[in-house]
Length: 419
Image (cartoon, rainbow, N blue to C red; front, side, top):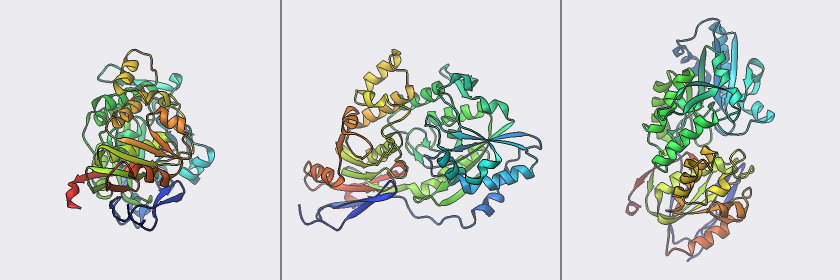
């Protein structure tokens, strides 16, 4: 198919991975735009914190901050926020980690994420599976309970800190998502994920949707009063920060996020080679790469997903290894019959199965075994170049896309003939 070009490269964990492609192929790069970072983050934050007008002296406040799986530079934010709260007469501050259904953070991860702020707060890592640590604060439209960590019932106000990128479940991350799934109980999170999976395989980039409405409801019931949301670029530099009411800040953050992650892309590509960076600790994070790739691939196209996944498939949802290889209708049947208890794992499995019915998914990973990948209905290779060479043989002069920061991308699909 012609001589090879010099090596291409993609992020792979803390390093890079290299590959070659024949020089007679059309290759399109799909990656975040470059935007000027904030020059004086502390100054910009300080000038906005007065937007938290609900605070009163002596109040007990919880800060709900995202965990190590998110790129929010929380260590740059917390000291200034804590100084402001102290100046406002707040003496008791808890830091609740919005783990969602992730594993607890290790001590070294906590120190890296929050740094010196750890010495100034009461740190809490909620357990989403322990009903004794949840409190019911309302009811979902479908009658299911709204349950969140009990720690929120011990404070007067809560403030969320997170970042906003395109997200397949809720359109965009950030906003009220810091509460649901961030600090919600297993049943509540499961119902939310099943709602998303049953409606469509992805809400990526759809700002207003049923899932976001549910998140807003739960956050309101849980008492989330303020929000500090950031937008960061493809290498983690803050480009925008907003402070204030939950819905107002989120709306502006979405606009800023689109400036970086909503990118022009051809449609009907034959092959997409995608890096899961920075969401690559396990497949439970790396799977976010599937949704932007699904948007640009033709029916029967191939996604080659490059992801280290040092913690394997899904530490807190191991059932997906057996479920994801089933047809989506069968997974849903098992959920409705009560045979499957992990609604969260089942929902993601349903969506992966829907995507597999349209495109071929190939995983290149050191952290996922071949038998695990195949059980989930995916192809597997141990080496990226081997995967590329073999997949190229399935097409005649295929149109190729290379995705950098795939989990964060929102392709704006254009006609392939415009290339």
